[in-house]
Image 1 (cartoon, one colour):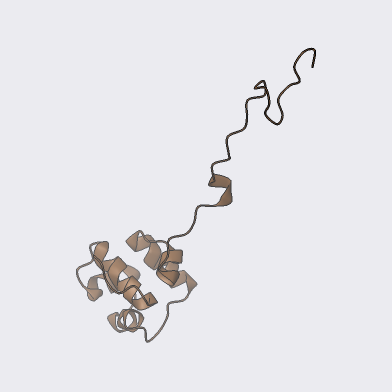
Image 2: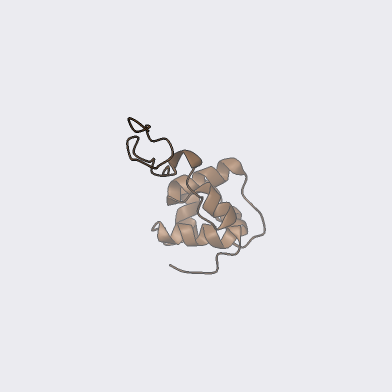
Length: 102
């Protein structure tokens, strides 16, 4: 489902629909909150706190980062692919072993 993802509320609404919750009422029951409270979230009258946002993320399969920013996080630097290292024995490359007699 594509929609306006410019607000936290619109992203919560999109996430709950995409997760298969047909109504605000069904999602509110899963969150164990009143429908009126969820209505305030999806209509940007209130922003859920970190614990509630974490529960929304768990129930919808979306990240808290996406719910709050609308962007997908970049992979951590640890997951970045390092550049290829030159072969140790290739002549003329930095780090190459010196040739015999050179």
